[in-house]
Image (cartoon, rainbow, N blue to C red; front, side, top):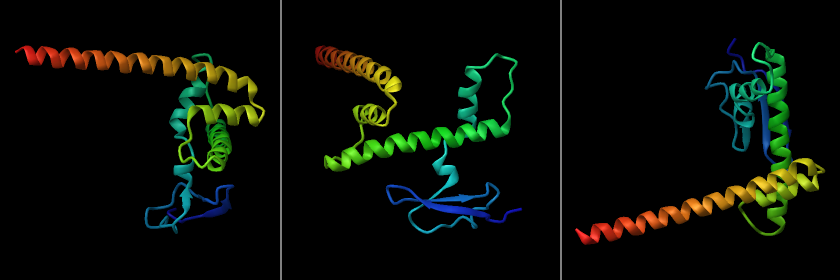
Length: 151
């Protein structure tokens, strides 16, 4: 049962090797060479995927294991696909960090305009709130320092 069943290895566009092995493989069986990404590291946790799927279904609905696993593969691949496109852009611009704007650009470039625009709006609001939160923290820090200096 602890056999390492190697279903296949794939090189992605970044040159990473993905190894598809059985989930019953033991730690000693999975000592892979450098550059190989194990399936459990490549995929989103299935419990999280199932939880997100359940949010859109009626309370009494059930989701089969096959449906959760299929969705897990799809969303993980989608994230890799979009991130890879954003990473290519950053590489061409000689940047090492992929940011939210790069993800929005990649979504639009790949034809997912219906998702890119709402994500841009969300990112803008998020940055506004983060800026406000940072300003509040600076103000609190300033006030705390002044109070400490009084005593």
